[in-house]
Length: 390
Image 1 (tube, rainbow, N blue to C red):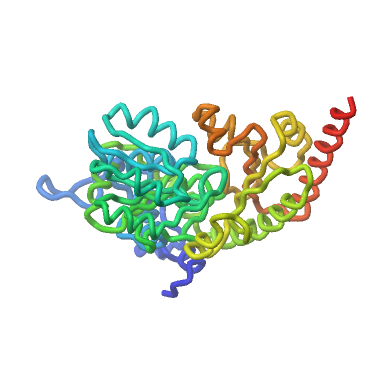
Image 2 (cartoon, rainbow, N blue to C red):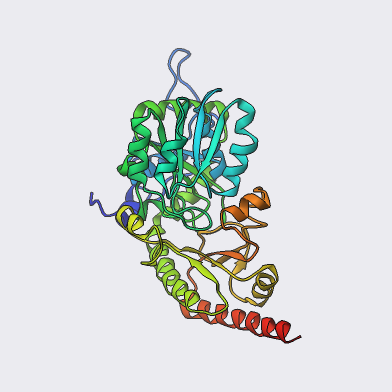
């Protein structure tokens, strides 16, 4: 089969060998009949394995060039299960501006198991090196980071981890296998909130993980079965369907995101735009080396919370909601949505101010989106002038 990903997205799951069905069957069964008391078949109970979920897990393993894939009930279930590979007394290093749910799990849950952590600015790998301790076991990378789109050099971070006996975990949600393959760059485990781009339709929650080698896969497989937060057969089927259209969806939305980022950058009301596709983005050279595209997510900052409220209220097309990566454009307000679990002082230290928005660009016509953003920003500009005049 060709190595081109768009083709792999559609054909990795194959056809049903028994019927020739072009879609994987949905096995809505919690348990499976066994023919012997001494030897069980490949499936016995759906927490431990389900044929529909297995097809999904094999698909994501192929797409990420790994050995084993795992499907979980949410992105956080995948991330949490990965961290369950650690033991009391271990230490982890985590991207400073990580997703708020990951921050909450590490800061408020993982510490209850005696596992210590350090949040580090991973745009500076010297800081990562200095943060490594004798008991450091994992370097956890999110690149581009959520929501300010900082870039970490995956290959160098992985080499640093290996030199110190650590594993490298990478959250690849924003880029997907279409644009970035962390395992090929030396990472040991790649994670996805498959709720987002891989599904693409705001209709399921799901998480995926892929390991680079079989031994780590066996360890994570044990955690998946013991922890039990697995993806159901129906949602596994839906996710397989979403993956088939990922190439077409992300290329269109990514093209629109580029135009929108350029428009916002040139608008006087917008203070700053965070987008890895800009040549002047500090991490652009690294991103260009390790990723083949810029994705469909960007963030931008207005002056303050009042300007943010005016802007949001004036928009007509984007959905104002938690999440990203869908066919509809989604505008999010990280301070009270994705990063609400992070204390205000920690948010602001990471650049997540009360004027910051995250925009996940969907499949609407790019000109319609730009016209809508323009009229909303114009209302902010007029209101601001009136406030100054008064």
